[in-house]
Image (cartoon, rainbow, N blue to C red):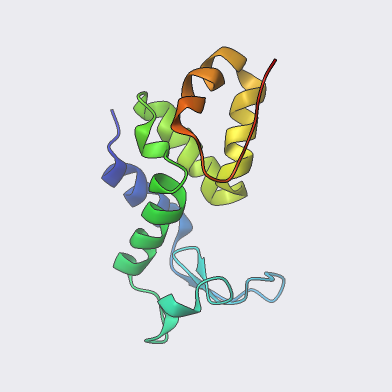
Length: 118
């Protein structure tokens, strides 16, 4: 079963190194962390792996409370989906996939989404 550390290592590996593609509106990116979105991570001219990991951990694991998902494989999918599309959309797609499963997880009171079912 994947741990949070293993999930973050896989994300860092998949996001890769430095890029600056002209079609990418985020501009320069390193480990998937753009200079536009996270200028604080670029103070030394590049993003360290440790800084990228801290951003991913904070914004895509602990803030959306994906670290509290009891199934590590579901957690891995939600974190990965969140990195690419935003954690709010990951939660909404979970709700569309399985209402019962989503209702089980709503007890986490995600801070940025309010969804209710009647």
